[in-house]
Length: 217
Image (cartoon, rainbow, N blue to C red):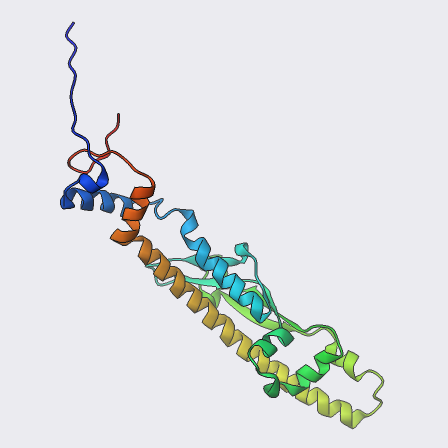
């Protein structure tokens, strides 16, 4: 019985020729599992942290996105926002004096995000919409006034400001969704660069043959 031993020359990534290195990086770039699940986490965590200061309550699982090559791709988020906190954060008290006056003496007014029928297939910004959820704040404020003209006047101002605030919050929700998508896309594109792939290869070293194929011992 004849036993034949085959000898291979093996290389670390930085020892490969530029052409072989490109082969390795292309293989990583085209791997369906790359850049792995964690790549989006820092972007989403920063997004949620920044929104919290504005009065938003968003959990990690409330953020959805798909990308980055189809027409229906995009990002959106669920959650709710405390209107008074949002108004103060954006220094818009002068635009909503009635709302601020009423909320000073009553319980919080919130706006909530809902999904629409597009959400069955997509998750871009227009798969969601926002509505302010009134819960008797004005009734609580005017309780015991016994002045119909005064009540009617503040009701009209309240309704006008609530409608205007809802429109602004909805515009803000769409802008935030689009900003989130842009940041996710930028992060994803970075992971597709040679620089990022080389960092990944250095963190998870392999041994290669001369042509860039992984050497299986």
